[in-house]
Image (cartoon, rainbow, N blue to C red; front, side):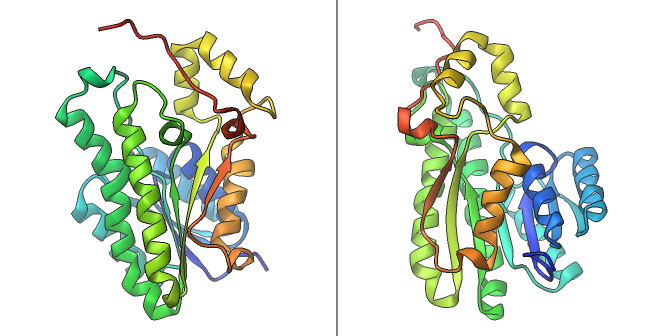
Length: 263
């Protein structure tokens, strides 16, 4: 019997990278996984993999920067499975790489909607269902970019730090309902990481050298396993925490710098 047998998880941005890794890891433990993904092809592929790995998969097309789409994803989860035990807020749609003085209002609002408001809307959406069930687990994927204030990604940094504050607040307010809320700040070899390597190979090599474990994490085995822990009863006394699943990079205060010219 898997650790998530009988449980239902809603995972956003599960078509690629960490979201896909989490969905696959959950499936190996018997979970039903709703894959909320804007890209239909990748979302359907992940949902099919969930079925193959021992879970039950459902693809839901969702642009989580839209409040109605977030609510619809929750409604689709309840309509299909009748409950929601786990919410993993992972989706991100890419930001701009610019100096702070060059960021536009649209750049910043894009980050806020995807990295903060989507988390807020989905958390509000699952709350009544988790409360009625007597509990649940929420995991927000945030980032060392915000913790260490990495350069040129202000909308990403600020939205992720806002999500961390949101998670701690929800953990405090919802604890008596049995709802646990935690944060994971990962370092993983995702498609986004590979794009960064291609853009700034020297900085990527320097970052890897500063990682105490000397490697980027695997989205499924390294990151997915920690999110599984937070989703399962093994972490039933854990809430309001940020776990740095990064090979120790946060210890060194690792910084990225793709070398943009001065304004």
